[in-house]
Length: 169
Image 1 (tube, rainbow, N blue to C red):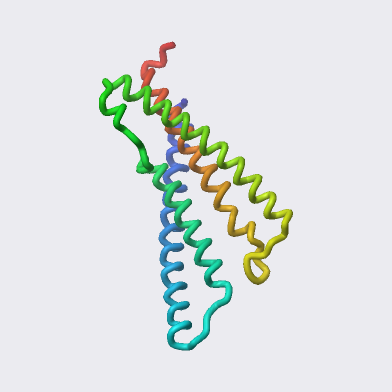
Image 2 (cartoon, rainbow, N blue to C red):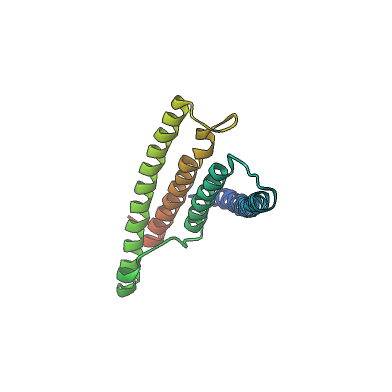
């Protein structure tokens, strides 16, 4: 991969990570504030927001999936590394390459399945609350899995480059 293309991809990845991090910060702060408001309304004014539970549940879903995507970027996702610890350096790299490829395939399948799920929700015309369709809130599924697919794909490519650093076949 040429240096300038790799540099552009790294810059794009960096700014996507910054956007992702601040989106997570905003969503967590908003969820905390929103649920605090709901508690105040319920306990002090004997009222509430009928749609509050639905929004809170979907905010938690967005935070969880964006957090999973972020963990993938930082290579902080769950990894069973007992076998790589017992292998020599090259064997370790091979196992981690297979792991990245497997994760890439699983996330690609989940991305496609969640895309079909959202398409089904669009055709059902179900409303979450007010005039907001439910599928708007569920777009996080294909988006997060697509990002994780790309990140695992990138990790797989990098692991192949590390396996063959000289470029020889």
